[in-house]
Image (cartoon, rainbow, N blue to C red; front, side, top):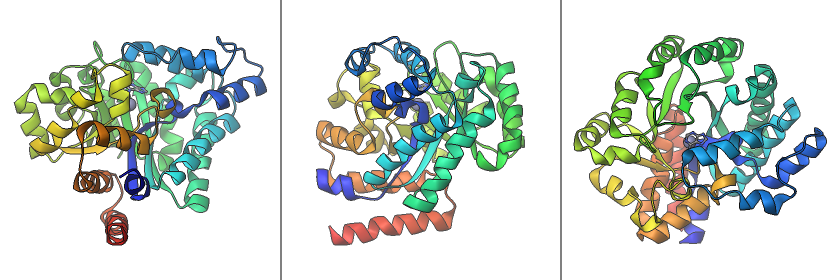
Length: 334
Ligand code: ADE
Ligand code: ZN
C-alpha cells in the first residue's frame, strides 16, 4: 500500500508555504540574515513542536517566519517544498501564503511574492509541477488590514488565483470579512476559507453564504450539523482535510477517530492534504500513509481520494481530465 500511495499521481490543495519551513533551512536562513532564533539548535526547536491547539502552533509558526527577509529566502523556502512535492508524485499544488505575516514586519509585498512566484514558475519548467497561488488573509487582524493587503496584491493579480482566510479561527468568524471577500470576488479571485477546524459548524455556513467560497479548508466540525453536511453535499463543495494537522493540533485525539471515513461514507467531497508539513510530522504521502493505516482505507478509497484531489482543484476541465488520465494509467500498471 505504501508503494501504491507513493506512486499514485496526486494534487495538494491545502498547504501553507510558511508551514513547510524545515528547521534545517530555518537555521540556515537565520544565520545568513544574522538573526538569532529563540532556540539554540534544531533539536531544541523540534522539541517545541508539541501543540495543544491551533493558537500554540500559530505562535511558533509566526515566530519562525521572522527569519524570512529577502526574496531569495522566499524562493528557497518554496523551492524546498516543490522538490519534496516532486518526490511525492504531486503533479499539481495550490500553495497558500500569508502576506500579512511578512508585511506586518516591514517586508515588502513584492519581496514575498517575487520569491514564491519565481520558485513556482521554475517548478512548472524544471519539475513539471503546475500550481495555483492562494493569498490568505489573517483572520485575527482587522478587516481593514485585509483590504490593504488586497490593494497591495493588485499589481501581482496575474500571479494570484485565489484569496483565502486562515489563522486563529474561534472568535474570528467568516462574516467579519464579508465585504473584503465580496471585493475579491468582484476582482475575479476564487475564494477559499478555513472553517470548522476549531470553529463551530456555523462558521462553515458563514463561509458558504457570506464569503461564497469555492472550497472549504478543513470543515471537520461540519459533521456536528446534518443540515451543514447536506448543504455541502448539495453544493458539491470540496473539503481539504488534513489528518496529521488534525492530530497534532488536537482536533482529533487519535487518527483512528478521524472523521475522514464518516465524511466519505456520507458522500462529502473530501481530499487529503498536509497543511503545515514541517510542523506536523509529514508531507502529503505521510498523511495518506497514516490515515490509510488508522482507518484501514482500501485501494479504492486511495484512488478516490487521489481523483478528488484533481477534481477539487482549480485547474480547468481539460487539465483535470489529463491528470485524471494519469491516475487511470497508473492504476492500469499497478
Ligand atoms: N495557518 C497555517 N496553518 C493553519 C491552520 N491549520 N489553521 C489556520 N491557520 C493556519
Ligand atoms: Zn491550513
